[in-house]
Length: 488
Image (spheres, rainbow, N blue to C red):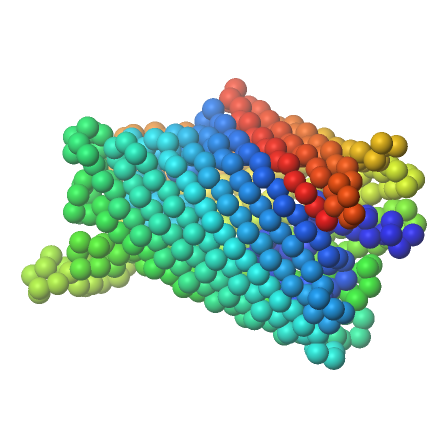
């Protein structure tokens, strides 16, 4: 029965994970119950195609190959080690109004043009963590590094090189039937960016420094002097995690992070033209219970984010340098993402089982630009359910399969953009994107994993998933991925 419990726990953790996101990981959690030794190496391909882009700055499609390797190893009863390595290379299709990498991190302050095109992207990422138990205390250290290179070989030709480093330290103590872990972390970010034109007129566009909801720095648009920039950022995070010392019980965490990113113009004596502050509060809570051959889990995730942006007024070199005369708060975006879910899994026998997972989502956001006054707000409600089945055949092959169905709708939303102060092409694209984000949508998906023993504790597997979204406006989107791997 203990072995069955472990298998059930691992099966559900693969679906749900423990934390609300990778940034909410605590090294001390490596010593929590349910963190069993495991290693996984996989290579595959990921695909996205949208007839209308949900985020035009990320393009209408993606074709990407990847390699992932992860391992978790308990060195003893008192220590554990985790390591990971990732490589991704692909093409973003039909990117518009964005020449900057990490758009989801740096928006709205990005360099952009109206022509766009396909963008080559390549990512390297490495991570590691170590945790040790010292009596009733635990101590942990973790670090992550990510390098990103994106470029285009036709006009306009952005070339972006990004480095992103995170370091966390944690300490915890056993308190009765629970373990409590406290974490402090630091983040350092840098991105250098240049956009070049082989033919200054061939692309028929300028580069614009966007400042939010269709506004831009008119003073700094062009095709040469203002197309070399860099972003420098740093931040911190702090949080607390707790876990029951038994397989059953409550688990959860809460984290707060704040980062600031300043954009500089290289050819203007590194003059800082914008500053973006991002504050984020996340929390998650889980309840887990094993009852015979049944596993029950319920929980929720919450993320609240505040993005505040300031634009700087830069001198005209009359004093011998491009100095900052004034900084004006001009942009603010508040967002909330919440999820509730339940999991039920039943192991019919030693060879088969089924699972059911309902989910509810709420997304709300409100973005404002002070002058000219601009506003975008929306509320999106969504629900989904996944039904899963697994079976081990006499030939030792194992099948894990699931069907997912979901629906999303926006009962309240609004967009206000001043036509007189917005480029017509950008205005049109923003209205189209906003229509996609608030359109009623139905989703249908399938995921399959086939695996079999490959000697000792190793298993070789082949997995794939496909999701199709149907919009009330008559257009669709497709997402797919497949991979072959080895786990042990």
